[in-house]
Length: 303
Image (cartoon, rainbow, N blue to C red):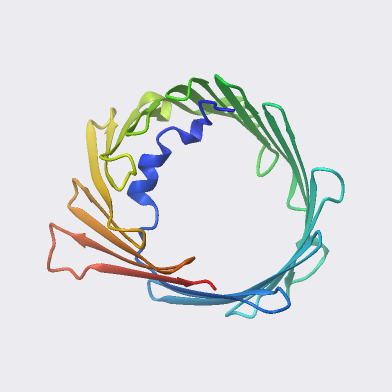
């Protein structure tokens, strides 16, 4: 079934091209699978001047999934997931050591029921979150979604989208039940095709206007250009960001972006082997070339 999609999907492809995978951290991830089916993953990250290291393992047996994680500060977290306790249900229990007491044990019970044109998800977490209800309704020409949260204060989020596969009109708002007020109004218009994606989003009760444009120069979408324009009406300020993507081949991709503040970022993604990749990114201040650039590195090796 084709639908106009959720409100969060309007302008998402353009935003992802401008923001996704850009990082100034150093990260190395190594994964391996043992003969018994246990997946081991080690991750080392340098963020600023701070280092972090964690080791996690995942083991699945029939409908049970066990996740075990240890970090550099000797914190241990274990999550047990049991699928199919009842039709369309999932039970998860999380325990963190050494701070393990009744108030720190999180239990989640999720009911996910997919019906024609509908998707209903009910999640209960104890003792953290008494109730979280998520409802999504998909139709050929309309989409509706709502989320109800009880903590830290009762909050209800509404979003709706109408249109066709190529054109969508959407609105979103949040209702604060404790104060009895609607907050965070947003409205958007999106247009999409095989070659382009365009979106106009109004936020902050109409005070902020964002315009996104993404254009693919070929059918395989190997070469793309994107632009983001933000207008703050109350301050009469404009922000402009442009970017692009070029897929050299199946193993090599290059991305770049530049904003009107003179910040230039570039990203090189290399596929070392299937499921494994190396990403090198850098960010430069074009108005202060005497400052050293920020360099990021991410390596993921998966068997």
